[in-house]
Image (cartoon, rainbow, N blue to C red; front, side, top):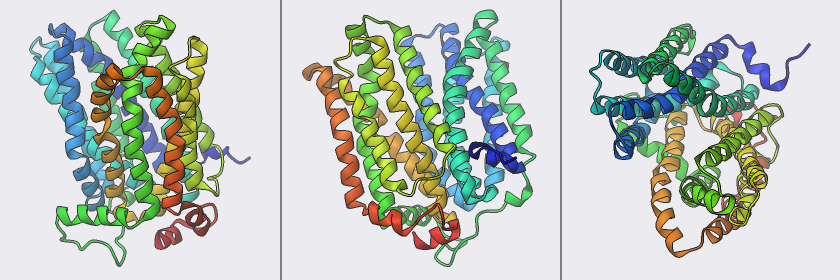
Length: 429
């Protein structure tokens, strides 16, 4: 009896090891989001102190993500992933020990948050680069769908819920100790990854020389991106979309909830949970089917057309209708993200995959704070309903432009990923 398509990656031993460690690690990350808040409060901190600690993590991630991509292409990805998990364990373990001993200070939390951000900057490019080395090309879509399903469920729901219960029943220090145990478990599991994936991906004839500088490696990744239309225009689309989307969702949606639904923080939290649940459903649904032949245009229209429901956000006065809007946006966003991750692994040459993944991560992160910073002042002069209307209506237009200028309709037919082996795709990219 054949396995469902979404379960096929589990046939491979190294994937089972990797996904088990990832699941435990991201569960711990979800716990940290809550435990960190109450550690700050326990130390007498308020919103300003909490903002400092949270910002430290973002700074570590953004400052090192490009270097993380270079490292993923230069160093053995297996060792890099293990080293990151070890560093996470040291950071969280130190916070737990200091908290239990009554010696914890705010700067300890900020330093730990910074190190966790740096760890994420190195982990995700390495994870993206190692996955095609342990799975055949036809299983990558399902593997990315599984990761896209687990992340909102474990990091946004189960992890925070578990931490909240532990903090309430015991203390923030207890929750942090459990997080350290999660990272210890993930670290032990990762040591069972086969050493066959310990060496860097083979370099093609056009790959970087063994002693090339980090700056040259970065320039090569940027040059590849610029001269590859489907990649360049998708990243350009993502830059503009993040600028349009993140600020309204993170900054303006709470005010829309309060004004239109007479809701509070719990209402807003539930709506964000609905958005996350939609992302999980979209990821799992995509993992369960074949990669569409029109994978480039389909992905961009999932993102673009899937954002259209946001146009009515500023007019909705019914809670369940707004929840349905965010669920649909989550479904289409999650499905598109699974396709995108698979395209990078299938069409980017192995020796560049870490750098391209980190560039993708960087451009997505770089404008998030800008979008959030602009949303508030913009809402002071423009009605919130108009901002959401523009976001919903402009998004599909951006997708159509990216498809046209990137020549994606011809490109996806010329490179049919449902039939051509991954190696051939890389040569044809």
